[in-house]
Length: 172
Length: 283
Image 1 (spheres, chains in turn orange, red):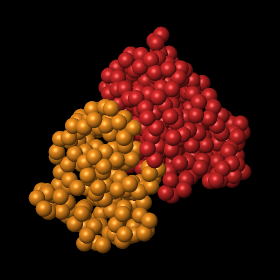
Image 2 (tube, chains in turn red, brown):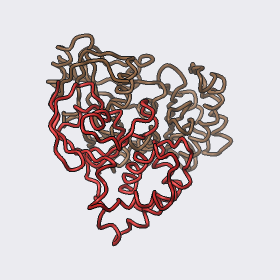
Image 3 (cartoon, helix red, strand yellow):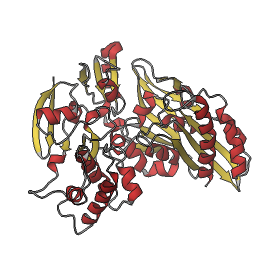
Image 4 (cartoon, one colour):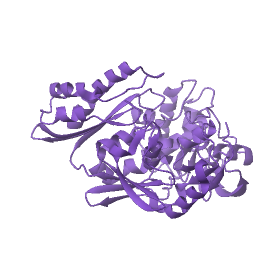
């Protein structure tokens, strides 16, 4: 067993975990954060995307022990005071989901994308979410939602949006 | 799937990591960014007894100028390589190739050193290291040694890193002012290269003065396309001359046949992509 102390959606947790526990399993099974989904289990689909120290990662490809001391944000931690995150709102308004399975990962990756590029064109959105697969192939509305969210989040309209934190050792 | 059981250690210095590697014996495995290793562990294609996580060693991260070289810590993430001003200015080909690796999430975690040490022939950065004559710094119990990229890639998933050793730094000679391009052919939903071409070209007065060309996934290791390089030097930077030189690209290659592509298709791709890469590089 290894000790993990990690902040998830603003709450500090301290747990003993087996080193082989994947972050996504820790989030879902230990913390009950079932909003983060397991899609492919082969690190292709991006359904399990969460933010680790402000950067999107596939939580099926990170060990829980590796996030000791870190801050994790899941889809369950982005609404503020009962108000949806602008990207969540935009997915809702643009009907950017059909079955909805890819949605939590799509939203987490879209927030990351908009942190790096606040005003992406269609091609940049498509490239920015290339690590997230929608089996319903509902990409048209997903791209529309990300661009709509970008409009909502433009300076002056982004009071509720947390800006991404740079990771330790980041070169930017 | 869930990986089989292993112990986990997180050293805070290279010296500690080398000791942990020695103590771990034959079944110890180094964990860098984990974007290849963790999927492999989940599939139980690897079942190490102990995992040594290099994520807690600050000295292995970062990019600095070192005379006529740019030195990059082995644990520097792709994301940080792509955005670094020194890399953009002096080793642009590396930034261009790294941008094509996997997807945004993987580029946050995956590391330059991890990719080179893993030595997947379909990985994108070996061809760049080879083409640009990078040097790889390897630390072991007896100190460090430096291996040129031309001697680093030994075989399929096999490098010059010996037992008990760790790749710590990659040094790229500056190619300031060179034109460069990484031309990659892959399936849309998976970023593994079927074939890719790394090209850095220096043009003087409309003539190609120097050329560096590396190939991804045209053999069991990355391959330096010396035939193309020699054919390019002294030629005008025109489409006809470049395409003629690109015909040399299959010399010395042993393209694999697999579910993605047959060897002869890869050879065809390599010629077409070499022409595109070099023309984009001379721009």
